[in-house]
Length: 107
Image (tube, rainbow, N blue to C red; front, side, top):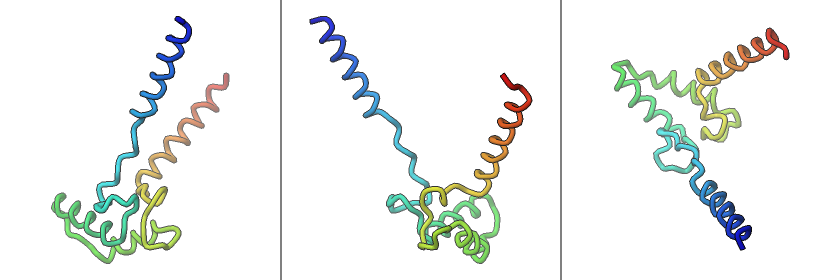
């Protein structure tokens, strides 16, 4: 009986952990929460960000940036396309540094 009770408690714990698993945070530019960012959403968010920083909004530049990031040319940014080039470069540098450290300290 104790074993059954312990097994049930463990099972309930796993179910609770699964239910509380963090869902990915929606992109702030995704105003309609459909999981992808349209060109209009991208431009509106870029304009808002530029204005908040006191910078001039360059629609032509952001249109070009959207086109470069939209790898599958479907008119939306989704999945890996949502990761900014700056964040991709930072992740690549971090990965390279880790690989260099591992090579320098073989175990």
